Amino acid sequence: MKQFLSRGRAVSLIRSFPRARVLVLGDLMLDEYLFGQVSRISPEAPVPVVEVERERLMLGGAANVAWNIRALGGTAVPVGVLGRDRAAGVMTAEFGAKGIPVTGLIPVAGRHTTIKTRIIAHHQQVVRVDREHRQDISPAAEKRVIASLKRLIPGADAVLIEDYNKGLLTGAVIAAALAAGRKHAVPVTVDPKLRHFLDYRGVTLFKPNIHETERALGVAITDDRDIDRAGAALLERLDAAAVLITAGERGMYLFPRRGRRTHIPTVAREIYDVSGAGDTVIAVITLALARGASFEEAAALATYAAGIEVSKFGVAAVTPAELIGTMRLP
Image: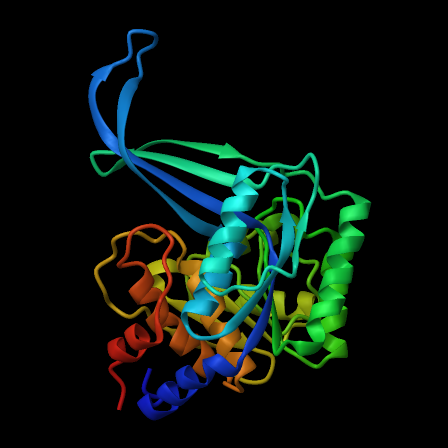
């Protein structure tokens, strides 16, 4: 990565993150972990009985992206819907404890706050239980989300759209976010899912993974020629300023509108848990772009951050000190 980023430039960008304010528009979630032991099979059914010893609640989805931005020193303002339930109270309290504003949160009666419960025994996940709604938000809630977005964007340096297919990102909400970004001349980044994959025309940076790209375009990506064709197709169909396709251990492939494709390899670290790596990547890229980084510089920083995140359990945030400390740059 020597050709993309010097250590001095990287440190300068990271230290400027506290001056960045990012609107995070997306599906907010809670991740609940129940840890325990299995010593017997239930007499009621042939399933293990997990004796829970401890539990842990963590921000997930777009909420985790907001926490990643905050942990790196930036200001994250989440915009999204919650239910009127216990999980919403837990999430709001967690945001408050982490210094994340809640002015963009919109409670919606009759809708569950998304909470994913993972039951883990002997270091293995036994089962996951999801409590959520996945249908589109109502027209009334849609209007409130758009109004909140328009109210908050004048003070923002970037808009980050995080889609988990939970119903927040309707066509109207997506169009409003892109229009607001253009009006206020701030970068708009997108971490997509398949349902609205090609609805982000005019986006600044579009960050799908390789499997989503294959499914959306109906192609198989097996070599560099395939990925070049896929990147060019996404640039054309989305009229994006840049496309960044993430490919796990193969690294990331950056396709800027102006310039040649760049392959950014992974930074070798011990991989413990890949959960949340994509959230970390989009958070770092958006912060860096908000502070004037090039696409290449932003992607290079993000791959270092992802290397740190996958060495931790579950979804986790990366700190400026960790990011600066892990970089081996001239």
